[in-house]
Length: 215
Image: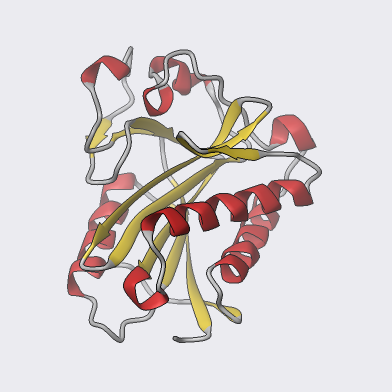
């Protein structure tokens, strides 16, 4: 397999164009296409997974709700949350879905540990938790042996919109963020540390920053 994992730093972009670009990349990629990870922040949006139930949307108000093709229930994205979309040929990598999820969780746990924040995964509820409060959400779709969607880490954001939903389908689930446990946070540094963890746990040797658009 290729030894270098490519990252695209997208800044802040609306959710739907990025989602549509992920779908296109996955639908059109050939067997020799490079794996990519897209790092992005989104303006406020709720996304409802394929198994999503309407009763978990309590009071969305002015924040748009987008029905998407990932697994899982409803979650919230907003500025100050680091989202990583994993466009990987998991068949080529030799990963099963559970293996990939476990690797993603381990990336996040080790990243948080580097800030002195102890975190853990739960076997029955994908994601990463600090003292029982959720700090990162995971949601994937596998198509043609390739993954898209990914993970969302709460870094330094407004957590209030999570109260308008049952996060990931769990009523009353407490949400937290890195800045609440580690103090002032440099967002770019968090992104750099996540990149390093993803390279390590996806078994790549090095990383590179990709240029150009996604459409």
